[in-house]
Structures are given as structure tokens and as C-alpha cells.
Length: 361
Figure 1 (spheres, rainbow, N blue to C red):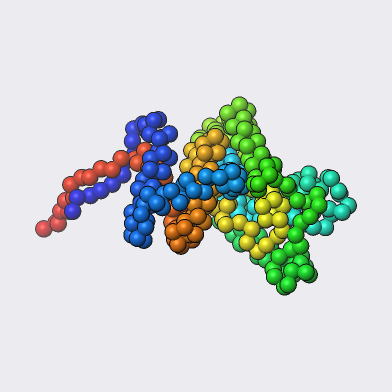
Figure 2 (cartoon, one colour; figure 1 turned 90 degrees about the vertical axis):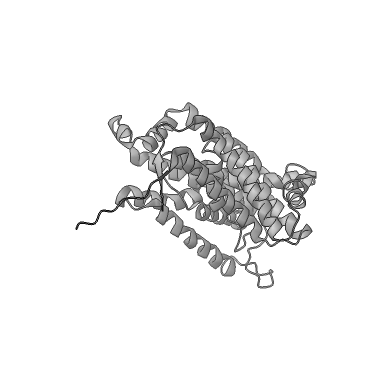
């Protein structure tokens, strides 16, 4: 049989580098059409349920911002780290710790703080996510532990901590024994900006994170250090850049942004602490970051697209009786095609003759 192998291209196409996310989206839509046909649904009708019906009303447009905000906040922080080859995979855990820290302030200190409750919750949420991300940062810089494993494992610790709190000391005594905290009230609730929607502070913070992330990576010396450390660590060492400091900064900023996303979620759309406060925003944000080519404005568009897939999946469940797993399949196909396009931009497929094996007489 002929041998098939991958060879690095002498130079990657700059045009295809930027077009590969769009190509991945097109291939995903084609794959989704085949999936819908297999499930016995009209692909055009399914596309309408997925991508048009959810944003056909003012409330739907607001929900797009509600779903997109935590994805964008988490993805901006992750993208900064990925640029430096700091692979934080634990944004989900940092999201949860931010929700716990900010939610704890809202539950127990709202009568004392009054109008200062909202700023205190945001600060606590950011610090909660930052401190959770500081654990893999310390292990990485002190013991050279792989941040992929440590940040990922801490996600499950955070989830178990949240479960313990809402089933134990923080459980609502008036909640009929359901695992949930008391609902936030008073100054601990982030009210929506527009009547008839749930769009609130999280969307504004996501936009500010996009602008801030762009300025950091494109217009600051720190952003330049992050890029150099990620591209050529040897050159960064020669230039005197402190690589450990870059690791600390990248994990801290990604943890803080994920924590902000968490506290905005529980004090806004959800309104209380529950065992499941996230449908996997921290993990899905990895797809968002790469779909947006690690660029803040690309992440904004990618976050809205993935948010639309969440809304579309819910709408398709109701109108077409499709299973909830369709959303996960859609996101999985998108990641698969995105990685495949990225691979083929950097490598080319070579089909050669089979190797001839000589047998000594």
C-alpha cells in the first residue's frame, strides 16, 4: 500500500491561516446537515431552528449576549496564555471558584455592604478565580508541573466544593431540601440593562475584556513579551524576559476573567448558587479561543457563534424534538474541523510509494 505522511510546508499561507476558521465553520455546517438528515430532520428547517429562530426577538438577542459573555470572558484570558504556550485548561474550575467567592459575599455581606455589594462581589469573584489559577502557576514555576494536568484536575475539586456548599452549610433552609443557596436579593443582584431581556453587566464586561485584551497583546510591551516567550523561549531568555513572571501573569489574568464570568453568571441570569452553574463554559471557551485565532475581536465573533449554538440547541429540542447532545456534537465537529484545517495549513499530505524492504540472502 502507498505510504501517507505529513510534511511541514516551507511557508504557511497567510491567507489560509485567517480563512481556516471560516472553512471549519462551513465544513461543520455541512457535517451538521448530514447529521440532521440521518436523524430524519430537514436540514434547512434544522438550520432555521438553530440559527434564526433563537435571535428573531429582542429577548433572543439578549440571550445571545447572556450566553456569549462568559464564553468571551473565559476565552480572552485563555488566549493570552495560549499565546505564551501557557495551557490553562482549568477555566471551568476558576469560573466555579469565582462564583463561590462572589456569591459568598452576596449571601453573607449584602446587608453590611449595601451599595458596595456589587463591586465587592466582582472583586471577590476575580480574586477567587485568580487564586485558583495561582495553584497551577506555583506548581509550574516551582516544580515544573504540567499546567494542563494541574489546572484540569483542580476543576473537579472546585465542582466538588460547590456541591458540598450548596448541599451543606450554604443550602437554603427554605429551599425544600433542594441543593441550592438562598436566592440573591437587594444589591447582590445584577439587574438587566434592557427591559424584557436578561442582558446585564456580564455583556459589558465581555466587551471591555475584548478591548483590553487587544490593547494588551497589540499595544503593550507586556504583550510583546508574551508573544516572544510563546514563539521563541530561547530568544526571550536572551532578551532578559522573565518567563516565570509571564506564566504567573497569564494564569492570573485568565483565572481572574473566568472568575468574573462566574460571579456574573450566578448574580445575574441564575440568581443563586446551584450544583451546576455552567454548561461547560470554561471548556467550550477553548474552542472559542482557537476559532477566533487567539485574537480578541475574532474571539468576540466566535463566542457569539458558539452562544448561538447553545440557544439553537435548546430551540431545536423544543421545535424539532432533537436530543440535547446535538449541541455537543456540533461543537465537537467544529473543533475537529478547526484542528484539521489548522493541520493542513501547516503541513501537506504526501502520498508516496511503499517502502521496499530488502531481505538478505
